[in-house]
Amino acid sequence: MPRFENEGFNPERRNRNRDIDRTVPEEENFYGYNPIDLNFNNRQKNENVVQDNQRRESGINPCDDFSQPYVNNTEQPQRFRSETVNDFFGHQSPQKPEQNKGDRHKKTHKNRPDKPPKKKGKQPHLSVGKSILVFILVLVLIIVGSVSVAMGRINYNEKQENKFAAADSLESSAMVKNILLLGVDARTGENAEQTRSDTMMLVSLDMKHHCIKMVSFLRDTWVYIPALEGEQRLNAACSSGGYQGVVDAIEYNFGIDIDGYAVVDFEMFKVLVDSLGGVEVDVTEAEAKEVTSHPYRYDHVKLDSGKYKLSGEQALAYCRIRKIDTDFVRTERQRTVMSAILTSAKHSSPFRLYNMAYKSAPYIETDMSKGELISFVMQAAFCITGDMHQTKVPFEGTWDYATIRGNSVISINTEENKQMLTDYIYNKSSDDINADENSDK
Image 1 (cartoon, rainbow, N blue to C red):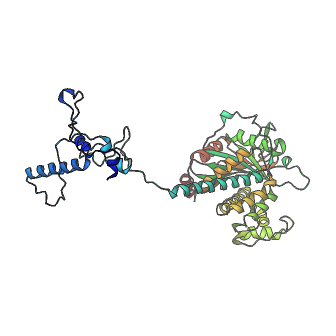
Image 2 (image 1 turned 180 degrees about the vertical axis):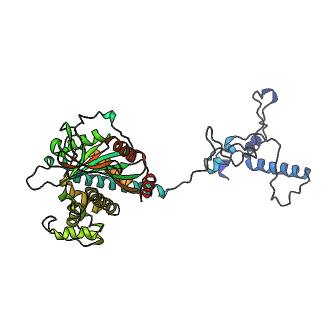
């Protein structure tokens, strides 16, 4: 006997339960529920039959190739979420409503303009850019550190105001930096500030016209010296008022604002030139003969005529030449060597420039601060790529030789030189200066 019968199982009872009508009576259907077919396979089969009938009514054979999907516009009742495919294959993001045909390929972002999709993944150029920035930062730190070491060897003086000329009476410009370069030839045991300045050269960095201008002031120029309260040769201002006395005298007579001074001993000239590996100068036969024929006067230096590189000792002897011509030509030789130094520095490596600055620093004395010196060097680096020009005061046609109180001096028209110097430093471009020089030839 089967096991179910021993347990009191009645097969007829199961058949009766299957035939019971479980539909909800119409009068008790309070919520409007439709009969639900819980057999998914049968429901899917019935739907396929309905679709085939609809195809036949539309003139489509169900056995044809269905490369073009059939679009059923008949509204279908919404299925329960439990009947969706997502319940069988995991969670899927809800499908977005279909957009219009014209906007099908557009990305709609609220309050955001259309942008191309961002590319995922690493962007190598960003890491390369960061590496370059780090390299530049390290290089700047090394340069600043090296410059600071060299500047620590310079002798600094306290800046003084000009007591004889008001600041608003002096011509100035934010685009022009004027530094007065003073060369002193003090012998052993002499106080350099109490000697007469042998070289007075104004170096102007003209950032407006992108050039460097050098102006030599002749030492025998007869002008008013404020520290002496009277007229005297210009180079006497140093022995009476020190380095600041020279600045005061030039500002008072020529109306040019001087931002600071730098004093160099002529011995520094040798160190400077040798650090650059020499400077190229064209030596005339008369100049070579003067230096070579007077060993005591020029420290036993020998020169040959022609264009070649001068060592530090040779360059210094060349600048000291004074017996064969006038002071006008002597200052021109000094500006020639200065131009050669700047040209050589322009083509030198950073290491050679640092070596030059480090060795020359102890021979320099200035009233500029370290910050002002750094600013001056940065501006010089900008202007040195342009042209370099040189001239002298007094200008042509504004002076005469004269004998005053038994002294052979250069008498000048001060007001005319003042106007011409102001125009040269602040107003004239390289083209203007070149045109003036060509017209004088």
